Length: 236
Image (cartoon, rainbow, N blue to C red; front, side, top):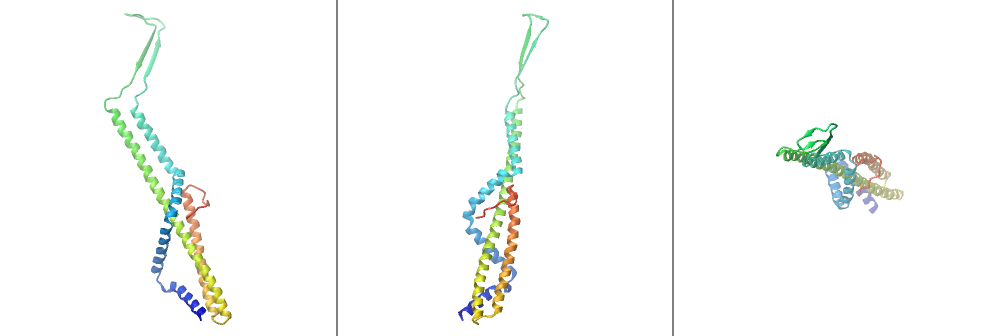
């Protein structure tokens, strides 16, 4: 009698998906996944941060921004520097006579000095350009960090949902064994076993779809890190 009640309870739970509206299903699904994400947030933060740092180190666009910023910084330093001092020398084949006597050679030194206020204006302009490049770097880093974090948590959500489905499949298999035993002793029908098997197949298909979604997201995640598409990822 207890066995029949147990099987009936399982069928009621499995049929809830058919009675519940699609909106309620989605609400429950996302609430549950949000709860799982909250639990694993502490353990994930360190692992996620290492992936973000790796993405920043390997991202070619970010490297280009940093190169332009370094060039802009060099231009700021160049503006503050005076032009090189010019030294010239000359030797006379014929010695011209001057008031001080005959000239054999001539030497001169010249230094170009910018007009008053020119250095300050150039420095302000170069500093503004460098600041612009620095802002571009900050924006690029934030966008990259956000993309990596979103992809990482999507992978975690897929993995968490797969784990839940796997546990439910194993649970249904154990119930199936109990149902088969009940059928042998006449306490359950073959229909009960069939319904359990159908439900298992449904969950298996859902698990396969999630597996494909996980692999597709994994490719996108590795692309953000500028790594091979099939590179192993550790999602904690």
